[in-house]
Length: 187
Image (cartoon, rainbow, N blue to C red; front, top):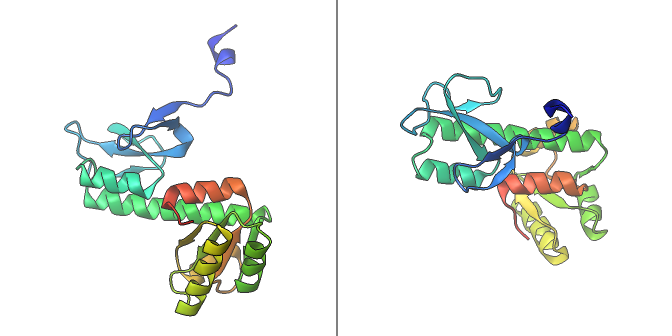
């Protein structure tokens, strides 16, 4: 059997330079690093995987980015690029979940998803009113559903193709897990 046939369907495995976790290449993102270990100031995040320079991989987690910055592996510019990249990635996941019909958006639908225990994750807009934040945080804690404070009402609404949304409930386990891995989360 040829090598191509034997390796068909396998994903390449990479090692995170921050936490040391091995994971499929698709679960990480690449940064370009100088020979002395410092991130290239002109390059930073390499979304294509084809930029010149020595590459290093980091988990798609804010905690790994913070650790890479505190350890001096990446600079301030690369940290900001990485945060923007992960924010965009999370918004893409939410948009895909919406297209798959696995989102309940708005306060009423979000509350129904929480009460019926179909929500795997609740996303609360950071600029939502204090009463809305408190109400949904308390409901999530009571029903033991993870939640995050993320983005703003306008962005959440636009990504879903709707008006402003203060609350978005993700009803799919896989999408919920991927978004929670990025931001951490509360339970």
